[in-house]
Image 1 (cartoon, helix red, strand yellow):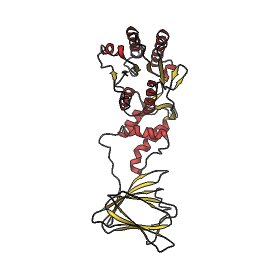
Image 2: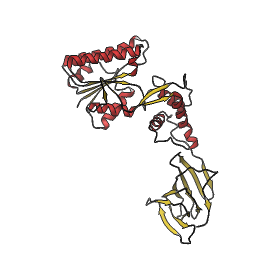
Image 3: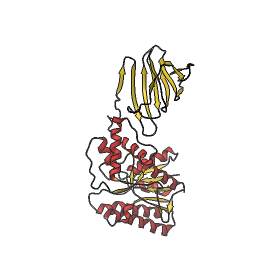
Image 4: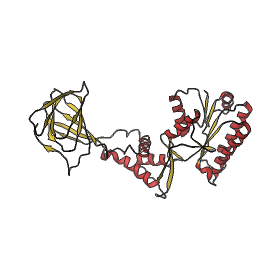
Length: 369
């Protein structure tokens, strides 16, 4: 299948072309404003499907709206009729097509062209009035508020929010791409004359900005977003894509003593926390038990033994562990336990606890194994 993508170098086009290739669609004809216009004539006679994503949304003057969003669409459709190609065509319109502004008028004019084209040729048309799309590769400080917020906050730049309570309708780029590929495969989500992305979000600007600032501060408090919230999960991925290239890494605060070190890695509100424990040779750590707190230990380097004793019994259980055979050891409640480094090098253990540490209620009681 030969697929033509106009606007291939734009935010939507880049994501679509990449994912089409990921899914095995390899005959992709990419067309953008830098492409030689004559190339279009070599593409259109044998094109099987068109994603018409090209358009103008930030021109130097309002007349360019109509030239980019109506004029090029008209040229494209006339050439299709010239070559007698009735392949399906999808057009990226906007919810602003409902508004009486230059951009909205140009988008609506492009839609009308497609309706007329359908009436004349019977070709299948798919019109998507997209709300604000967010995700990786959008251009910040251009036409995407989310991209601007993410980029500026990640780069310690100021942002402007005129009305914090203003609501924004949003769709995530991956959900848009899924829907467009569904359209390619005749599985589009269609309502009447228009198609739409099934998963949308309505959020206030203040909620969006506060969430992005929480992503920035998460490096200090070692937190990660609540990943069961689909919007937060997608926005966090978007934010990370705008990190400065020299700031991917960040240091953790290590608690170091003569025994080794203990470092908190990740804390979550609902899934506990992960820490990294380093024990020097011969060192024993632990000798405590918990009422409700439970843990999982995973030795990833070195070798040692994890010992348990039911606090009402004398029998000691031993589990030998080493980094060459990864094995997770559950730490049940009601068992005092410790971990000893039996090797000649440092032993590194990944430790998960089902709750974040609360110094006011540590649920940790000293008792020798």
